[in-house]
Amino acid sequence: MLLSLSSLSLRPPSPPLLFISPPKPSPSPLRSRPLSLSRRAMASSSNEEDPRLQRIASSIRVIPNFPKPGVMFQDITTTLLDPKAFRDTIDLFVERYREKGITVVAGIEARGFIFGPPIALDIGAKFVPIRKPKKLPGEVISEEYTLEYGTDKIEMHVGAVQPGDRVLVIDDLIATGGTLCAAIKLLERVGAEVVESACVIELPELKGRDKLGDRPLFVLVKAV
Image (cartoon, rainbow, N blue to C red; front, side):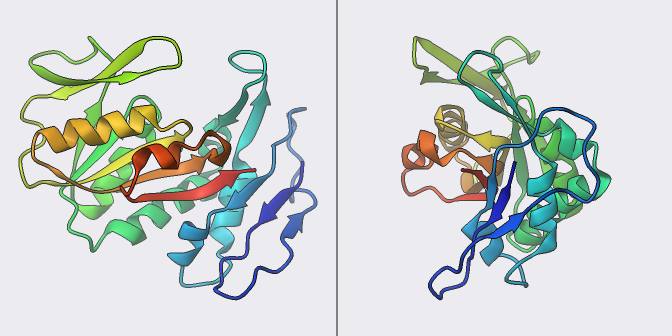
């Protein structure tokens, strides 16, 4: 499919650039749904049109009707197969957060565990996993959140995050925002300051950003 690059200058947006095809055709019969580069992400770049963002958007595969009919699954495993795109993803986050005094990178299960640790290492912060119930040994603190049908909860170790810690929350994608919002509340309950949440992909039509309220969110690409 076509990938569009959103204009992120302060001037009225120009027509999107269209990527007709990737340089090397993928052997997979599945093609990606269009992804637009985030205005926030582009604003953080020194260049108006950062080629790293284009590479990341092009590397994400979309699987239709997975895990159930009607769902367009954003597959970042193809980004992990592209060392340049994977490195670009980490670098863009590191460049944004290196000088922000982050002391903790909190990764949400499961794909937050992929992006969080290398970011934490590069900025000199500790990594804290936020997990599904009954996955962490020892004493935990939990936060419940609402699903479409029923509830779920997430947990982290007691003492892993200290009052006054400056936290970056990482996940691969924000959809409805329920898990991300619960993670923020969990961290704030122990006295941490959540500086920002960051995701590789945003699904704007699911309005997850609205659920976060005025809490800052940074994303690299948006599915459109």
